[in-house]
Length: 118
Image (cartoon, rainbow, N blue to C red; front, side):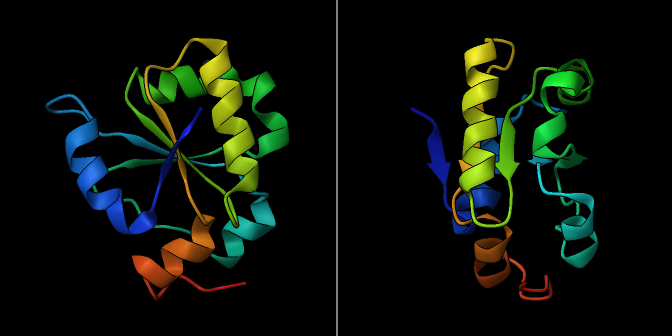
């Protein structure tokens, strides 16, 4: 089962998840138009954008980008990101994967109100 991370708890997770001197990854699996509409800002984490449908073909790119660090998957409401998180865990290549529950919609309400709701 994939751990569900409430966006309000993200900062604590971010601060405790990565190895010293490293940063966790937020994997945004939304489509490019969604990213243009609303996006999180890097703040103590690395933001990687790979649309859900491209994950299997770009798994090596994600491995390189994450460098073994924890990954928090993000989408609009948390359903696509949950599917991607399951896929990543099943691959056995990623040590820690969580799903940002409620997606960028919840992020906007709980973490950063400047992120547009759509």
